[in-house]
Length: 439
Image (cartoon, rainbow, N blue to C red; front, side):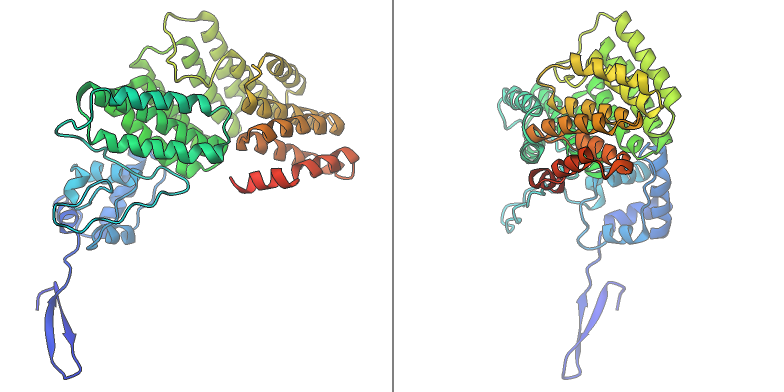
């Protein structure tokens, strides 16, 4: 019998030779053709390629390769697709994988309806292409108008309600790409990239799900590539830098920021956009313990805004302003131990923030509470922390809640004080606790 046959015995002592599933022969053939005789060798090559592509440390195992070479290979996640395509230099569809959006051929049984995940937009690389347009030319503009509405709703709608709606919107956009061509496709891809960026922002900042956010940012970057929008690509890459930056992986964050600045140079960024790139990098440096470099970057951002330029920021760039830069500065001064300067900076930020900046206000109040705790004033720290909780009761924001919990840890030496006990009653009340658990 061949290596693809198996003998199945019967009670009467006879047997019959049955065909064994050959597995994903396309991927196996491509792997061997590329010179990787074993699954382990291929896995090692994929692991090495992750660093070269700026994906950080991703370890691919031989077990994972075996799954891909099985008779029913799973659709690889986004970062794995990038690695496979890079190493084998072949489109993913030519390697025996079936995209989840593919419809069955005529006469075939219908595929089961996909079950939407609670969180995460899933992997959908490469994006589907249409040979002939099915949708009208207005589909891109229509889809974009919904994206604009979600952009505005983000600032006030609870993330637990907002996120599933945005995720479904991105799924719709991905499907529509397979039915759209020409200018409409480019408009649609731009709006899809913005929608995916919004989904990633919610996952990272509002729900504190960095791994989901990282995959979503990969999809957002590909959609921006479909639209050939370098500035949107720069914004996505800078957001992606937050993921390793907040985890203390400085080199990985720096590499993503270099990519973001490269993309920005290909476009016409406004002065505020360039200052925001400085602010993002400063935030990452602060999280990695390099506050001096962070303060240098913020000072440069202030100079860039003061100098200005002739370029206007796009409408989707609605998360940054000079007062937000000052908020970054105050947090860095706090982490650097510059307590009087941080208090002065953050107090001015609180005065200048627009009334509808509820999420940012909770973060600034949390930082001011940390300033007072560092100054040894538990009463003032608790008062600021309770103000932050008031904001979080209006609109939940995981990043703001993180600031408050950090303050509470700093207040432990005064745990027996009445003000700290009162803060605990607020911090661990029913509604706050449930909101934290629902993240």
